[in-house]
Amino acid sequence: MSPTAKLAKNEQMWNKMRMETDHQPLAGRIQLDDPLKDGRQSETALKVWRGAARLLRQLDFACLPEVTLASARRADLLALGPKHELWIVEVKSSIADFRTDTKWPDYHLHCDRLYFATHPDVPLEIFPEEAGLIVSDGFGAEILREAPEHKLAAATRKSVTHRFARHAAHRLHNLSDPDGVQLFQSY
Image (cartoon, rainbow, N blue to C red; front, side):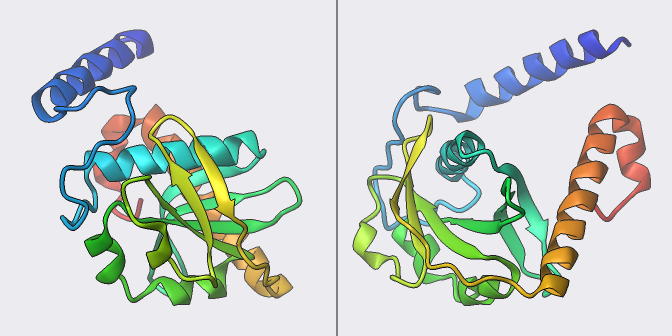
């Protein structure tokens, strides 16, 4: 099967899955009936992630989702900037999602700046001042509060950047060799 045919098949499958599971307009603002409901790994979380990733791309950052760090924590979004800065964005799609997360302070050990990303229906005052704040509408996003900067040590920066590069390379390989994905368990 040609790459174009594979893409078309994947797009058809993705559209079918969205039609079966998505009850909201794809391009519209995020709607959440109950902000207390835990929305982790939901369509809402994906829209928050997408808007935040687009914002970072506009700021000339390269982004990767779900990157496992040396501490075994998994960053929702790891971003590498044009001046080698490293930002972690933690996506929070509901009050419950934020309240159940006690691991976020550990991310400071792996980045120069830490941000939370959420959507307009989550009360912004729940997010701590020691992290920046991004609000996403599913299409784009805006930084409402800059994150305090705490520069990483050179060795840590090298290690996180190396991890970023390896994750990106493995994911690119998985896209170009989807049949080989089952042979490799780590990415």
